[in-house]
Length: 80
Image (cartoon, rainbow, N blue to C red; front, top):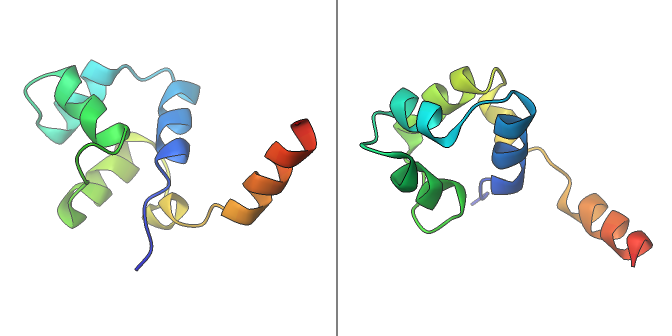
């Protein structure tokens, strides 16, 4: 089972200048703090939320899973 790359989701949102509240509104959450719990991994996104999330972030659902984690780890090692 693949896990969502929450780092990608957060960075994509920031890259597009979308606020936490705007994301909360898109997904039908009551407030931004609820959305933040999903983005930080305290709650898990549901499968039916992924198309809405992808639409809001102007990307494909597969983008949430395609990030090469080992490449990210290697880049972090190089920085250290």
